[in-house]
Length: 198
Image (cartoon, rainbow, N blue to C red; front, side, top):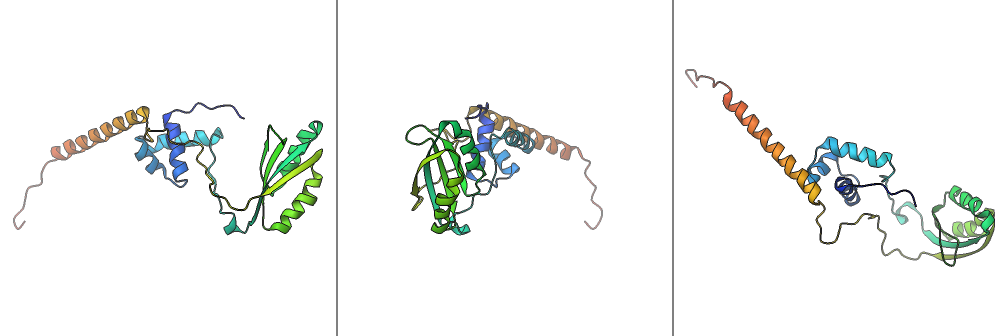
């Protein structure tokens, strides 16, 4: 796993907002989190630059013509593990590669248009993986849950914690002061005298 980035309450609030709606605007998130649009924009830019998050379109597999998905466990010669991983990551049909403990050394998930394509991958495609000893493939029949919520809401805690709530209070106070300032400027303007006929 990569290094852990320090995320404060605002970072987490932005991530949760985008998990709920990946198209959420800066203004929408700013209002919900009680900060300015510029603050949200800068924080999101940093989260993207640090690769804490990525914003991508997630397609429905069936609707884009991918009707064969499978999970394959592999045993590989230890001396050729790096080469095997490199080869698997090159394959466009492989969408997930992980080194694991337990029965298998490597687990991959593949998505293909049909079972004929899956057959070709298992017979011909995997033949090019260095050091492959054995495989065990399970075809996915139906997906009952597929979640991309990696940072769930804390149990019993609203999306905004005390730190964000504090920023919300400051933002509201700032808006109140702006309104008062506008009102004072409006009251100080000289009133136009009415002319005859008005």
